[in-house]
Image (cartoon, rainbow over all chains, first blue to last red):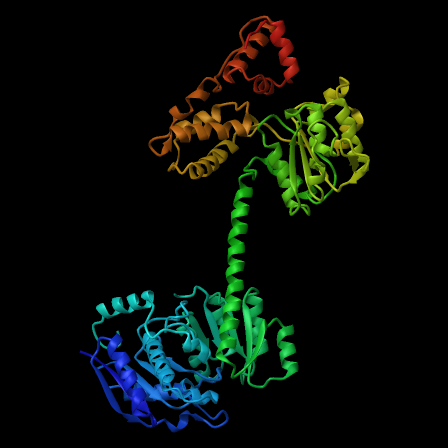
Length: 184
Length: 449
């Protein structure tokens, strides 16, 4: 049986890791294990932008993945970006094994607002479901309430539910029924 | 859901290409990447990408603008977005001048890219739908298209194209069912007036009064029942073409009115005092010998010369038998589709019957015969039996018996009427005489229909 691994990339508080683990356990039928915290690769930091290149972190995650990996989800407090885009809430290999969630822009404090743990937890769960969904082949959903819908700002994240829509849920169920090993 | 519109990202930085491609793939797009302009051009030749993201600065070889121009040459419909980290107004203007649809400065907000891509794809989708509709429309038009391999008909179609954009009046002559209206449509839709109305009026179908108000419209109160101002066919055809079928049947008064429209391009509505100006091309058609009618004093010679600026004479189907298999095949395909009936074709025996028949009702009669055969067809192929109604009239080798001329004429008239269930119009057309002449002969020979 292959395993869904969750790994903190750089310092991450314990609560989000627990929320993420609970959400993954609820939706994905794999044994779930935490790996040791992974240091953020030095070459991921873009000094000009003060952000981290998600591609470099994802490469590091792929190198870290144990042999029995079904999926590996990295969780980071770093602010992610790619050369073309000014920021990312997270990134995943479509139908691949690596997913990455950034907590940075999910916190109210990022927007100079008062901390809201409930909101932060909800956003973290939604983003977890979104990136892991991509690794199982789900593309963006047209239902704005589905966690698989595209969110280009935090307001759109907040308008999502914490559960997949019927179409995406059914797709995952079919996918899991035929799941027969790593990288499937 | 997978998008049917592929996207190509052209950038010398692999991380830029791959990260952007991964992000777009999450949105369901098919995304390819190219590390330089040369490779991008090769890929554009092989695949019709809907959107090209091209980095402006690419060291060595083709830069972004050159790549864009080359792709634009191969794929003029493609949407090209120039990406640069070195935003200057000059490069932006140059890129847009050379045909870039958008110009973005990296890094940009994900929302900006997302909206840009969906906006472009929405336009592509509309363009595609438009193309499908146009194709459907053109298929509808093909319903009226002239199908022929006959040299004379090819000449006629060539002439129709040559005169399509002229304003000159055209007189189309030919027996009933030869496709006079199709030729008129071909003229209209091949020329500058194609996007304007093509209005048909059957002059023989209406009485003089009705035809007058039909052609010129009428004012409120012009006659009993004229409740409001109504535009006539000439006004409806403004900018386009009016097709006056069976022009030989119009009354002397209407001949005078029509002459005035042809000469002065203006007319009065029935009951009206205000002159109405129109820009209408007139195509008239007749199965009668207008010159003969002029000689008999039944048709105005000045109108005849006005109408007969360009004359097209369509040969009857019996004079272009090589078109019969072609037309039959076309009608089988079209009518079986319309009737939703699976018919694969016509047997060689049945085709021989069709080729041998004289088709007095011409192409229209052939079309009707095929439709009748399809309706009664049971085994997917039109057999000889499906055309049994035609066998009576099939060409038979015959010798002219020694009979008085009048008796021969009487027999020919009887046979022509029998074949057409007593239809005088069709029988007259088949005999090459007009209806009134046939009536005279029916009376003389005491033939009852």
